[in-house]
Structure formats: structure tokens, C-alpha cells
Image (tube, rainbow, N blue to C red; front, side):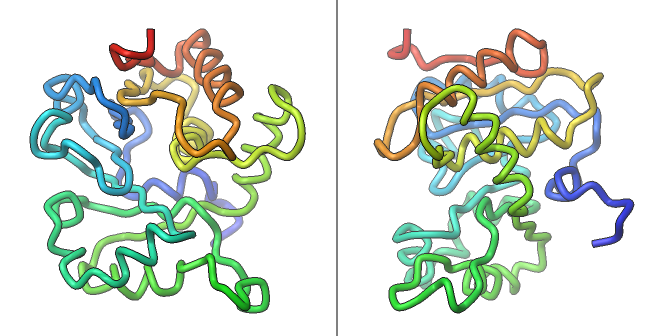
Length: 211
């Protein structure tokens, strides 16, 4: 990557600096019409409710490239035919590629395989860099103990705001329930979202069951 290219902003192919953006998580309660009205719609993984209760548009699809979920997708011959995959204009893989020596004996990183699987679609695929992960862990580390393990949703939101001009309109975030796998620092992530909201950079539309 050339020295004059910001690696965070480069992770968002085809996303103008001042575009309106809806960030759609996987918790229930998404306002479908409002999400679809955004200039760009970022979704995650299996995008539950896509085509119905969570809306019918997607421009960027983030696909977790480590662990069993990607292994499952790689084994699914119909994965590329899923509507959310077909309609996405670009893909974001949230974890940097592990060196081969660090991916043994039981592989956890499937970045190479994911890139090969998505290549026939002919759409941009960007991998969030390790530098962003380090910055994200520092941001969460100020709000929790130990070495935080950010969730995919947090990493994508963090990357999007990190590479977005301060004067851009607030990102509309839907379907973030801050719950799930206990290894993620949900309280710290929620605190970061709250601070981004207070700064006017993000608007968080909480699911109805989340208070």
C-alpha cells in the first residue's frame, strides 16, 4: 500500500467520505426502512433478517475470517449464491491474515481460503490491518481489564469511524445488542459506542429489548 494511502480509509472500497451509512448488526430491532434509506449499508456475516425485517439493501458485507463460521461457509457450495453475498458490492474481512507458522496445527485463520472463495465474484475484498486491531485494543483497554478481544461488530465500527472525516454525518447503527460470546468485552464496547454517540459521530438505535 502506498505511503500516502490511509490503511483505515482504504478498508472501505467505494464508500465516499461524506456518505450516509447504516451499520446493521445482528441483534433484532433494526428499522428496516431507515437502514435501507442510507447511501451505504454495512452488514455482518449471515445478516439475519436480510430481505425482510432488517431491510433489503447491502453495499458492504463483513465476513468473520477466523474460526468455525468461516470454515462452515467454505464447506457450503451455495454460499456465493446467498442473496446478501450476491448483492454486496464489497467485502471486509475483519482479521489480518496469520502467518502460516502461526496457523498450526489446528488452523483458525481462513483468510487465504476466503479470498479464493470470493474472488470469482470480482468484487473488492479488504482485510482490516493489524495496526487497526492494536488501536482498537488500546481503545477498549482503557475501559476494561486485561487484553481485550474485540468483537467483529466493534472492529468494523471502529475501522469505519477511524477512517471517516470528523465532519461527516453520524453513522446510524442498528441491531447492536452488546451480548454474545463471553470472550468479548461487551461493556467496554458499549461504553465506546456511547462516547462516539456523545461526540456526534454515531447514532445508536438500541434493540427494543436492550432498554
